[in-house]
Image 1 (cartoon, rainbow, N blue to C red):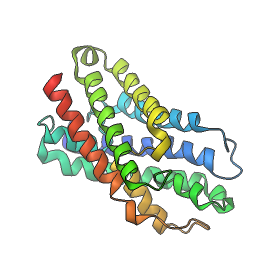
Image 2: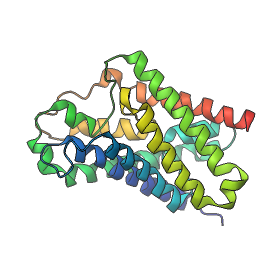
Image 3: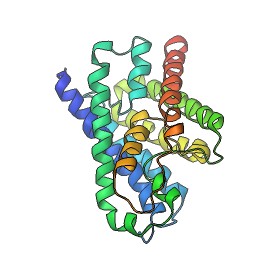
Image 4: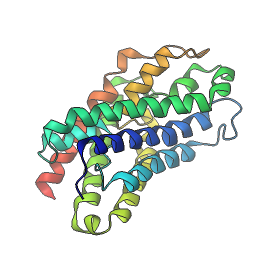
Length: 242
């Protein structure tokens, strides 16, 4: 069934919002003071992001492709797998969805934001940064993480077995993200998605949160540029070799 561009953009908007609620919501549960999940560990965060991708792909994979990620959209467009005429509407929908999802997390955890005194913990619920404050390492981690995400996700969703059983492929994509956060999440978070980092960083800068510290704009380009570059290479590997 063919869906209109408007319907597909709505799917991207909702899907990206869900990603933010599950992903950054998990971070908030672990990092913010006095939550039920405070200090429950990295596995909770990895699971949150895995489900945050799995559910939108299950819901909207057959509608919009469930990119829920500007890097995925651009990577496919560069390789001729997605029409350029639809890139801007998709990305705008993803950015707006990320804003709504992050605002839901903020409202849900508002008392805990007020109680938390650690600027690093607060920032982690919005955006990524390198654990060693090393921009080169930050870029490398986001680049390779997104490259792997894109090439494995495209293989899962676009090869014959994935097209025959899209639900199974969607579940696999969720486990891809879960695994990547577990394996490559130590240095940066990771973001793997410009919308997941840039829009929440902007909200971190705007929202009146005590003890929030700076929004680290000097490194904000990295989780935007590195995932896009990684996604282009990942899509190229899929197109050339698969």
